Length: 472
Ligand code: GLN
Image (cartoon, rainbow, N blue to C red; front, side):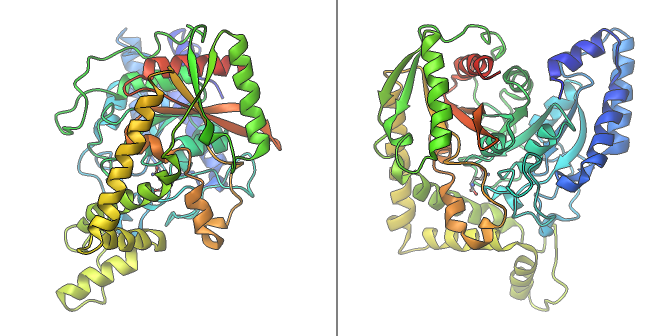
């Protein structure tokens, strides 16, 4: 697949047009329909916008590197006038009345949204098998999952329908599918990108970020979508940076932290070997490897699932069968209306999480679970702060092994929760992280995750770009 940079150069020198790129993208979506990466395809809208982009360019008013580039957006982000389902029956026919800020910024930069991508229902899952619209297939090996919950966006990029896409990451949902599909996935620092118009799963953990075929494209996307937003008061007031600025800086003099806890038991040995080789190569390029410790990390998954489900149970209370979305036809009393609408239209995993979240917030259990989990969250953040006193970035696997086999979500949901081990701690601490391909194991790409300091995306992307060079 050509990169954003390449396509943008072709648009600039006139060897292609935005209409041609959009048409090719739509054809490719049709040709790869079996992968089930898209929930809605926006044919007419995309072609119309592409025509406008070409007109802009002809008038000498092209906006920037994304003008005329086809992109895909996860279906939990609102796009005015189009269906936004979060892959749930409860929003099957919901048409968004406004556009999410990150999506709006993409369109203002001239990007052409060709479709809304499939996902785990309400972004709950790591395998993309929890969608009301059916699972997404991994184009690299159809017997394995593409990772979740932004599996549709990852596959949209990996299968060549678009060069880049937006996903959301609450506990790893950008980084894991990136690892499973051999693409680049970036979860920015909490507060870097507005969450306005993102259908909330767990508000203190959710963050929108880009997928791309290369690090530079992810940085280019971040340049466009980040920034303060009056609609989301958790967005940062920091001045904007150009994230593509230091991509050629290399790793000379950088100190890479290696958490002992991340490279021991539980990590597939072929994946470990691929990452070790990369780390040795980075050392040859002038980086220093330094062991660091994250002593509380073993509690990350349990505290994450308490906090995430607690917030989800509150966020999802708005789907009551009254205000919008699915309404049961079987209900005759008010309480029945709530219960039946929610029971009929939320999937199994979503119901499981609402139950768990309501339980950990209930009187009598609140202190034992929710408060305790918040304390662990603090300890994990302190661990990272301490580790970053002696290193610039931290290296980690993205996943404990190769992409899971299809069906494990049903047969062994616990194994699926545990596959979040390396990713959830960044969301608990608000840190940025990027997953990119690093060697192969059993013919499949291995994901390496770089963890950055808060708002340290420029440095993070610079190290990622150096890694990418060594991988190719
Ligand atoms: N697998 C995690 C969960 O199901 C993370 C999902 C996400 O990042 N949206 O909660």
